[in-house]
Length: 264
Image (cartoon, rainbow, N blue to C red):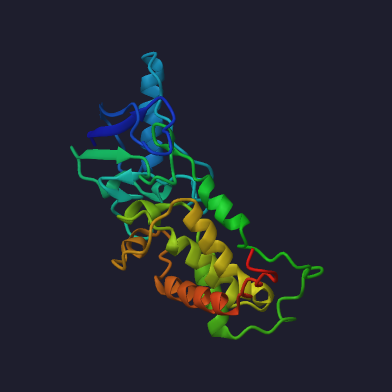
């Protein structure tokens, strides 16, 4: 195969208000690309050629290359992770493209994901949202036997569906408002369906939504772009569950105490 790559190159980190700072698309041509190569292996070949020429290799995120870590998200031909549904970039193979194809490769575009270099973005905003309450902080003792805590099959299935989120950020990049509601909804749904997570149910959604808003993510567009590009195919049902949990949490929130004193 022969492919032409148009890759976003950016040597300096973006500011919070300008994720396209000092960047541009650069064109490369690769011959003899095997259809059985993964997309990242193809980028490895390109970088080997660039290094041999004394040029700067393309920076991109990757880790496990097994579709489970969420590190490898890039936008390929306008679609996060590329053309194959339910597939991470590292598991995408070049046979998904025709011989002679021209491919456009960009970083995830969102104000909350500033570009660090080339295709690498800072997804620390997701980590800060998780730190706001997407975990069980109460002591649960030593690990229990699998059948020690009974969980209805439907609850277990719904919790597992949400727990498959790998935090890649594709949902944010696909949304025109850069919404993180599928990601946050997955965290809320994961815990609300399990007994261990219900201990902190009254505050979790409120805390996560506040952290999401503080990071500058937008609101849901209700157009399902997030579900369409999610490599784990997490359903938008989790957003509805998050909204219900948020309203419930706000209703249970203690009102601020009124100050007692004169009119001073």
